[in-house]
Amino acid sequence: MTGSKILLESGTNEVELLELYLDEGSGDKYKRWSFGLNVAKVKKIVREADLKNFSGRKQDGSISRGTSSVDTQNPLVLGMFEFMGAVIPLIDLSGWLHMEPVTNERRMVLITEFNEIVSAFLVSGVNRIHRVSWQDLESLQGNMAKYAEGTIIGTVKLTDPDRILQVLDLEQAMEDLNPERDKAALEEVEESLDCIYQAYCADDSRSMRNLVKNSLERGGFEVYGYPNGIEIWNELEEISAKVEKTGLHVSEFIQLVVSDIEMPGMDGHALTKRIKEDPNLKDLTVYLFSSLINEELLHKGKSVGANRQYSKPQIATLVKQARVDLNELYKCKP
Image 1: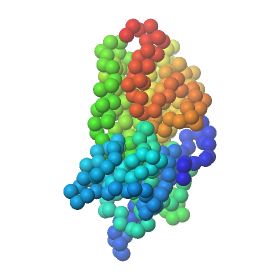
Image 2: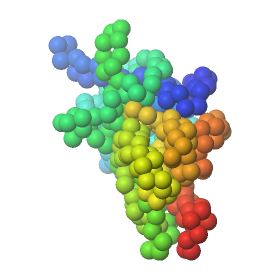
Image 3: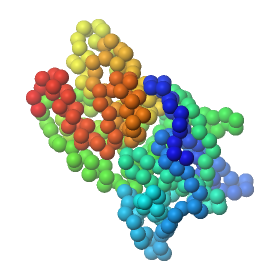
Image 4: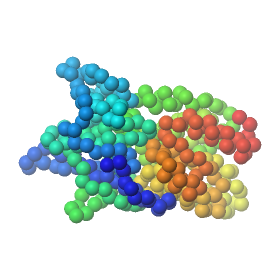
C-alpha cells in the first residue's frame, strides 16, 4: 500500500482514514480497539514476519545498530529494520497508548511518513479505508479530552458493525519519542521583539500547536491557538462581523492565520476556502502548515487561495517569511 489513489476535491472537507486495530486480553476479557490514521501518512503495510534485517533489543535494553529520528533507548522503540535503504524504528503503538502488548502471530507493521520522518508502528492488524468528512470527526470533550489529549484528536462513529474509530495523534507520539526535535526547531526561529503582529493558529495535534504558537511568539507575534478548524472559524466569523459593522480592514483585527490541513470539524483547505470567499476576510494572509505537504496538496492549497504552504519541519522559514510578507503588506519595518 502506498496511499490512496482517490483524489479528494479541494475544500470538500473530506479525508480517507485507514482503520487499524489493537487487540487486548483473551476469552471473556477480549477487546478490540479501532483506530484511524490518515491514509496520506501511510507508505506501506507489511507483516511483522516480513521485516528485513530486523534488530530488536538486547537483554540490556540497547539496540545495536542504525541511526534514528527517535531516541532508540526509549522502551517504546522495539527495534530497527531496513526499509528502502534506510534503517527505521519500529514503535510499540500499544505501549504508547498505555495498552497491553500486541501478542498475536499475525501482527502488522504500518510504515508511515510525515514531518519528513519515516517510522513504523506495530499493530494487531488493519481493516479497511473509510472516506469521511472532517465534520463527522468529533473533537474530544469533557473527561475524554482530559484522558486522551495528546494521543487521540477525535472520534468517528462507524456502523456494520457499530464501533468508534479513534483518530491517532502520531505527531505527538513522535514528539514523545524525541522531545529534543521540537526544542531544536524552536531555537532555529530568529527571535524578534519588534513590530508585533497578531496571528491565529489551528492544529489538532497538541505538540504541533504548541510548536507553532511558541515559534510565532518568538518571532514577534501575539498568537491565539485553536485545536480545530471549527473553533478558529467561529472566531474569524466574529471578526468578519466587526469588519462589516465598522468598515475597517480585516488587518485591524488580525493579520495572519496559520492552519494545519487535517483537523476535526473543518480541515485547513475548507477553512482557507471560507476565508478567501468571505468578502470581509479575503485579504487575510493564510499559511497552510502540515505534515502532509506534497505536490497534490500543494495544488489543493493553491486552488483554495492559501498564500503560502510549508511542511512542518519548516517552522523557522515560515516565521521569517511571515514577517517579510506582513512587513511588506503593512509597511512595518523589521
